Length: 165
Ligand SMILES: CC(C)(COP(=O)(O)OP(=O)(O)OC[C@H]1O[C@@H](n2cnc3c(N)ncnc32)[C@H](O)[C@@H]1OP(=O)(O)O)[C@@H](O)C(=O)NCCC(=O)NCCS
Image 1 (cartoon, rainbow, N blue to C red):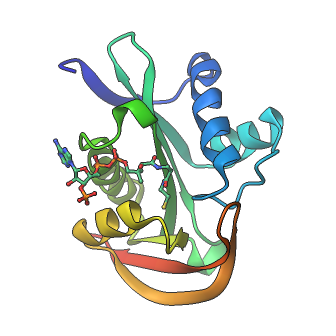
Image 2 (tube, protein in one colour):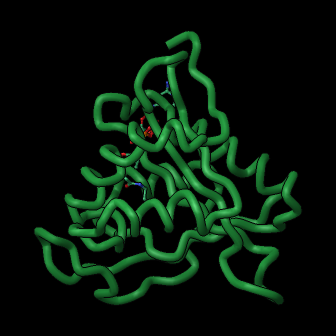
């Protein structure tokens, strides 16, 4: 994977990004997006609402990962950003999420954000929780039974936070 680059996601990437997001959200175990979300709904959430969206591609090869960055709140809370990350199943465990998260922190700082917050990290998503902790995020709150896991039912979710810079 020598040509891997993280770059801004273009509309031309969307046909390759959407199946990855659809499969991730259909599983109903990591994101609150409804498992039966339409392509238009997810396009709005992933491509239109964020301040910026990125893809990881190996040269001209398939999309290996994607993330977005946006303000977590309007106005007086808009100095804290929020990101969402997805890595293709076949590309997991190779450091791509780590690379995307580090990239997002640099981008966030360049955009003027002072901190990053994850609002709903599913407690059973142990790989993600461990990864974010390793990258300096702290669990600042536990939301009891706040996530309706498609297989496990109601499970806790974490708010995770990191001051940037
Ligand atoms: C959670 C998710 C983003 C992790 O992506 P990933 O690319 O597999 O993550 P990484 O490879 O950076 O790290 C995962 C593990 O691989 C390890 N790893 C393996 N090779 C590595 C390398 N070359 N460099 C860095 N880490 C490596 C990491 O140490 C980490 O180990 P750990 O599980 O013991 O903590 C991915 O599983 C995913 O997209 N899941 C579905 C959506 C999701 O849950 N998103 C996050 C919501 S909060």
